[in-house]
Figure 1 (cartoon, rainbow, N blue to C red):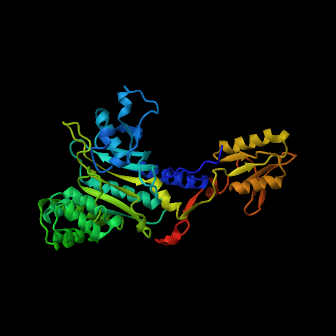
Figure 2 (spheres, one colour):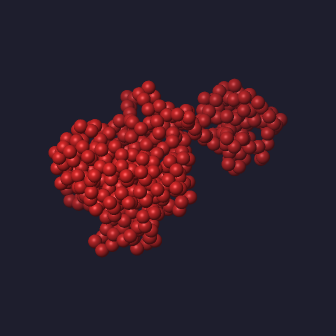
Figure 3 (cartoon, helix red, strand yellow):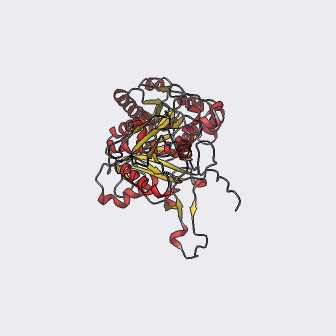
Length: 455
């Protein structure tokens, strides 16, 4: 068999990189659970027609079928792998509403699949970490502040550059577009959502050809997209543009409430940015995107928003608001640009040396005592000379080697410093910082948003 090649768009991390990913996931779960979000996992597939009913995603969905599917396999013919976790969650709420207490708070850490063109931070198979709050018929507005601040807390705990959550309101945007003369506000939203990708001239052309705006109307929409503030002053900037519409008034009030409340609770966590649109049609109010400071060109690593009608059975509607952290996407910048490092690539803290194969049971007994006390321990794979066993530990990043001499005396060696001291496996403990691998920023004091930092 020839050496296999990597499959583009399906990341497989090396052991040290996986430790970084686990650190991210552990932080996510801890913070979400501190705020009372319950963990869920939904199935990997959904009916195709359900996934295609909202947003421009049809070209990216992976359809699922058996290689030799029967022609009458009706159930399997219309399934596809989910491309995000929000649509499966909406279906889950409808299916299990009678067993849930509302407002229902959930978090979900799971893989998703999307047929995108692979590039830095964009994968075909990826892990997401979502939080959502869903109500029955109504959902209090304060949850739109809450989910953003929970995610901001996650970022403050993560080993990553500082993050800022950019926030807008779909009502504000749609009302402004309609007031500026758009015949299709949704098309205008989709055009503005492409601003960073194709530039203002191309977006202006789309606003005129697809949204029905005049050249002056398109120019106004581009001026709206340039409005950005860390406080509620954005409202005055929007009013100064001279556009009026009732939906615009409603959106301005809602966005001001979100930004004002967030600024009071966690200054600097949120920033109003009126070019944020979010391309999926199911968003109806507040929308969020998150950028790493110093790495803005990488794009959003966390996004979401308010959705009022995604989950409805015709009688009852379950409005919600949520955010999704792209774990794999975040890994793309943390690992891909060398921003983080793990202290070691294995969980092992201690390697127990083996004098000879006859004494391996004694080494196994030491390892069992250490493991019983929560210390990750391996036994040397071979009874080589101690120098070779120490080099084996060093190559794996294991900081300590344990020895038992012919008289049964125990000692432990810190192979980084060379210090070796008598020890008892029943009470010895390493320093807290050595007990498990740690992850930290390589250059936490500043960011580098330039090509020189690509691997």
